[in-house]
Length: 558
Image 1 (tube, rainbow, N blue to C red):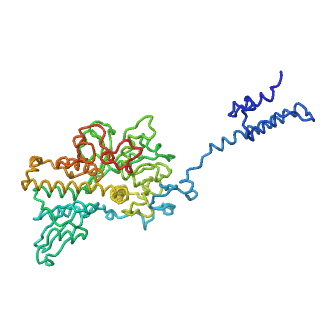
Image 2 (spheres, rainbow, N blue to C red):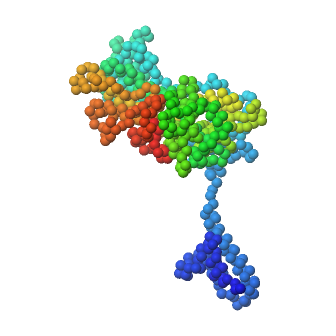
């Protein structure tokens, strides 16, 4: 039996991932270091003419070296770095991993910091917080001034359009028992509230003078009197459009070893430990026929799952978008049916099983600004063998908010933990509204609502005064400026654009958009059942700020 030629031996290397370069002609052979090594193997025998066995052994050794060199570059190409956020953290040897790790790109703050998590043993001096310190923040402290001080007293309201400030709505009330004037001036940027002693004025000042006392930038020469009988209802609705007793939060379930958004959103099964935690937050309800605040979930046709977690807390209704209870789509690694709701919440709660840290920016969303992370820690010294560790992360432009996380950040009392988490979630959302993205959106919402309010009050007042050109409005009593009991400013933003278009159609003013009012979807209260199971109108569909569109979400939630 003859031995295979050297050319035959080298060509067999192609079966192991190498390129059979010798099968090609010399003109196709690339000039590389590997080929130079090949040429050495195929070079003519030296004059010494070694024996056949020694030559074969030398050739085998060189062939293995060639294989290692050829494959070595491919292995190097396939190497990957360990995730930077994990590699960059300094962890205590033998200690527990932190709940949250920030992105290497930054942009988030964490409370408490890593050094406070080194020793998480409860101490008698610092453990726990008085539940009386769990104060819920007010979204707008002066939103109910008009309802409390004006609606029950005789007062007047006025409207005007300033060249530089835009639409203005002024309300004046004389409090005779206190001998003072109370004034509210509503502008696009904000509402100014002032109280003046009547003794300062020999005569009651005019509306223009009162407006300039609150804001020296007012340039109008006169105001129009509001004579519409339902004006207090419209003004109250505008003032309180940011006040909502309803909240919705996402809940993510992170198992041990899960570091990506796809892994976290793909969890379907719920462990007993996770179910116990959900029962701490609220009650698992059936969505079919549910009549209370639904948080954008389908309560008629089951398109958003059959169950959800709901609770009431200090007069506020809270709906939780639990990722494991939202629809799961086979073949969709991003799980857009879940991301549609979770990604459009402002605050989400993450429950961890295991010690895999949560990365601050792992969930890609333009709306999610804050995460509360909870991990159950089993400890022999605790009465029931378990304690809950808490950590918070938020984008850097979100101001800090209470209640203060205890030192160490541990809870063993379930009722104490529930009160802390619900208060922290509500305050987190209110604080997130102060971030740059939401502040910008709020300003646009308020501007649209104020423009609609001023136009509605002016037109209705002229109708009552008998203006023949507006007599057709007398039979139209369906005023839709702002809907009371709304679900938040994002919903009001979309509703304001539709109302603005409706008002322009009523006044005969052409709109910039080519979409007619009849083509715009009807606004509904967030607490009412949907009659249409179809897709909800999108935030960006209504007005179109491209920078607020969640790129991974098929549509925004109403």
